[in-house]
Image (cartoon, rainbow, N blue to C red; front, side):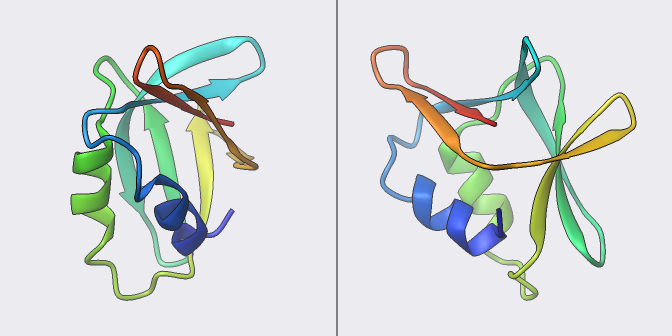
Length: 94
């Protein structure tokens, strides 16, 4: 998934929506975003980021057509979609 598509997809969510990443059977908090020259990496951690924080971090990027990947245990996985759990206020990136 490209960064502009992701930002548009999450733009109308509640700003307090927390984000998680899913890989295989694991669901982990999305805690860190790292940018390289060619890609945007989502990393797991202890505390899940909110929509508001993600938008604030990523809206100022000039080279916005970066591909997004999950980085788990030094392995990159492409992102294909987003699963919303509205009653819990959560979004899971897959």
